Structures are given as C-alpha cells and as structure tokens.
Image 1 (cartoon, each protein chain N blue to C red):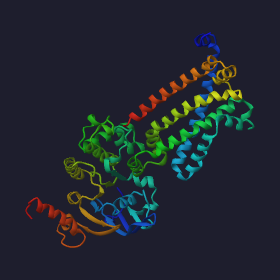
Image 2: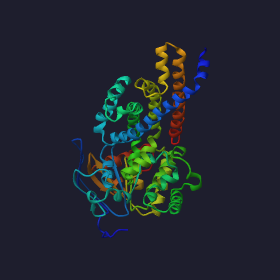
Image 3: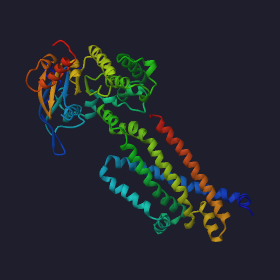
Image 4: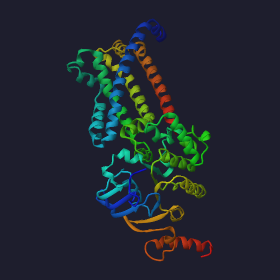
Length: 212
Length: 258
C-alpha cells in the first residue's frame, strides 16, 4: 500500500486528528496572545520587570517540551484533562516570542513620534491604543507568526500525554516503524504550519506597509 | 483667553535648575516670556534649549526653582490640560506615520471631543493656513509628502485646537536651504494671522534674527543675555558678539556692503 493509498484510506482519522490539532494550537495561541501582549506592554512600561518576565519566559522556552508536559501532569486542575494540560504547556511556549515582539515593537516606535504624542497632551492610554500598539502591530504579528509555527510543531508531542492531535500518527508510526503512518501526521502538520506562516506573513506585511 | 493680568509674563522661569544623571543641564535659569512675542532660544547643540521647552509643557519637571505657565507652576497643572494649551512642533513634525494628514491635524480637536464635522472644517482651515491644498493632501500619509510639507502639517497640527502657546523645537532643522527659507517666510506670514506666544529653538543665527521678537542666548545651561534682533546683530561685546561676528564675517566673504 502506497503512502497515498494509506492517506485516502485513513482520511477520516486524519481529518479528526487535524481538527484536534487545530484546537490545541488555536486555543493555546489565543491564551498566549491574551497573556503575552499585555505582558509585553507591561515590560515596555516598567523596564525593571524585563529581567523577571523575559527571563522567566526564556527559561520556559529552554525546558524540553516532553519534560514540560511531564512537569505539569501533577498540577491539580490542569492534570485532570490531557488537552487542558497540553494547551497550557503550548501557551507557555508561545509566550516568549509574543512578549518579546510586543516589547520590541513598542520600544521601537520612533522617539520623535512618542515625544510629539506626549507633548501634545495624549494620555498614556491614548498613546498606547492610538499610537504605540498600531505602530507595533506588524512586529507583534511577526511574533504571533513565529509562535504559531512553533506551536504547530510542538503540539505533535502532546499525543505523548494523550492529548491527541496529529502526533498520534507520528508516535504510532514510530512504534510500528512505518513511515506512511508517520507521514500521515507529519504532512498535515507541515501544511498547517505553512498555511499559518503564509497567512501571518501576509498580515504582517500589510500592517507594516500601511505606514512605511 | 485667560484672566492673567496683562503685565504678568505668560511663561516664567524662576531660578530653575534641571539635573539629569548627576549633571546639571540647566543652572539658575531665569527667563520671562511675554504674551504674544516670539522668543527664540539660540545656542549651541547641548546648551539646554530643548530642556527649556520640555520644562514648559511639563514633559520634565524642574529639579529646583519654578516654571510658571499663565502664573501657575507646571507642577500644579494637570499635565494633560497644560499640554493641550501648548502646541508642540518638533523636527520633521513628529507626525504619526499611520495617520493620514487629516487625522494628524485633527488629532487634538478629536481628543478634545469636538464633533466630527467641526474637526473636518478645522482641518480644512488649518491646512489652508499653512498653504497646503486640503483636497490634495488630506488623505495622504506623512511618508507620501515632502519634508517641507510634513513640517507645515506639524505646525497645522499644533495650531488645530487653537492653543495660546506654541513651542517649536528646531522645526526647520532638517530642511534643505531653499525649502527652509520658503518655510520660514511662510511661518512669518502665518504669525501675522495667528497671535500666539511662541518659543522657538534654533542653533541657526540667521533664522533667529529673521523670526525673533527677542533672542535669548543660551550657553551651557544658563541664560547669556536677551536681545532684540537689532541689538543682537550690533553686539560688539559679550556672548552675542561671537554670533554677530559670524554673520558679519559671512557678509564680508560674500562682499556685501558693511
């Protein structure tokens, strides 16, 4: 049976696991953006926190993903459901690029623009929402892009703790020493990463070019 | 405009000191700026001119002494209210690159809660005032217009909410000589039409002579004298002499009658 035949025969399962994979990635990215952008803003406002916040995110990033899943397993509420646990771990991984890019985007705003905004009497909130975030949006989206591509890959490991997703095929294929099975997980994951990359890349260019 | 007694200075520096990172940028600085005048702060780079401007609109607060605007210390003002009364123009205008010219100019009126059609009319008026055709420019972005035009938009934006004060920090510094001269002339004619108290920072002595009603010479964080343009040009002693000498020497090189 060729790879293609295998794919066709298992299309139902591939679809189901892809949807599951998408759920893991989508939910964790949502959490990472909702937490990461405000943290990035916080770091840009209180530079003293940068070591604490960026440092912690950096350390998280260095923990091997399988180990991080393992560490979180005994956590009371998280450990109760595998997908909950996987989403938390994935969100933690996605945090660093988002915090870092939000911070870089905001601090990269032309000082003359900032000076003018403040000097003309914009409040901190008006500056943030009307000037800093719009001007930083391209860089922030670049962070989301990196984080998403990263998460699509790491999410395959979530299958190791029973959270499902395309990793199911990969682990099964490894156990069976069957490349067709591995590819049934790897190819859809690669396509997903590619689509995310292209989508966010286009969005990023649009946002950057709207004012350059 | 304000209930200030007419003889009281609009802006007053009372023995002001400003210290940053253990270094005095301004020492025992005293200055009175009268209502309706254009005071030019002239000095070398790093002499403290920009520091003086930023003390007026409360971007920084004095380490010692008092800066009073309309008789009230800048530390006693609500900073946002204070700044909305003071137009601020910086080099290249500091325009928001993601806003159209219309949104840039209408910024403060919009923040002040003016109804949209009034903002729209005001933008039209302001662009005409600085000599830009509103129909041609309102929908463009700052990167789509020239440096001289950006500078004018910066002035239009600063004037849009009709503030009684205008601070200009080397506004024409980045322009080529021809554009610069045009913009200066345009600024002079604009000043006839809007009566504001203006503080203008430059290191260009010709610009100072051209635009000032009075020139305050700043040296190393201190005031080195205040002159009318005529007094300044005729100086044969004191700190103004160096500048006046430059003007005279240039004239001699070019063969102008002395």
